[in-house]
Image (tube, rainbow, N blue to C red):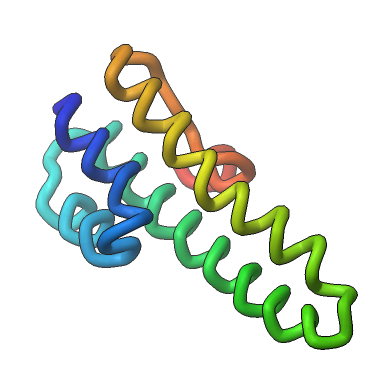
Length: 100
């Protein structure tokens, strides 16, 4: 299960929607299904925020947000990977408290 969690978090760089969706559909463990759904929603929200920030960066107001959301989208999965390798629980920021 540790490897699946690592791949789930790392999927942000190679298949942000596909891997969490497959894990969510095929997993039998409640914890793994919950984490997959959190990852799927997190990836969608981050890409949406980056897209909106990119649009607004043409008028310079979106540039700081573009940088911030890009960093969040890069750093949070790394924290998830480290926690998965250590067998420690991890919830995506904001998303984790909404999905049970």
